[in-house]
Length: 120
Image (cartoon, rainbow, N blue to C red; front, side, top):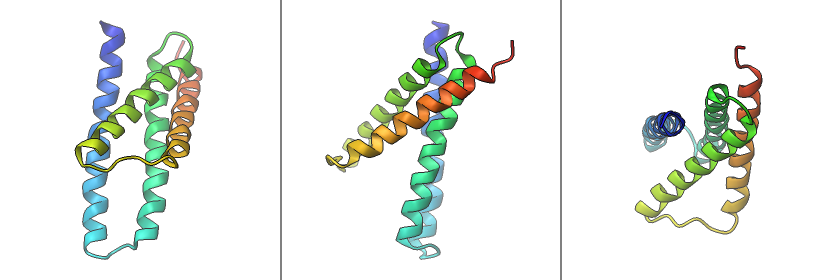
């Protein structure tokens, strides 16, 4: 059960961070404080860092194979994003596949870094 608990907590942290970020960035964009191009660039970088951070956290909690733990949390988070997209009726396109692969790669890299920074 402990194995699933760490994935659940990390996914909940991911979802909470994503919702807070979306509220802030939507508010700034609504009042035209930042342009759409800047919003898209900041969003891309933030999501990659968020995936990498989640991979790092789960990799640090892993006993071995940090890349696999990072990949697994990345898949869980991508499924969460797809689920949220379906709720808000924003269906992903084929070009989104590259975006999701980049997110999975960043999560996997985070897991690799996390397992290496683990205290022994």
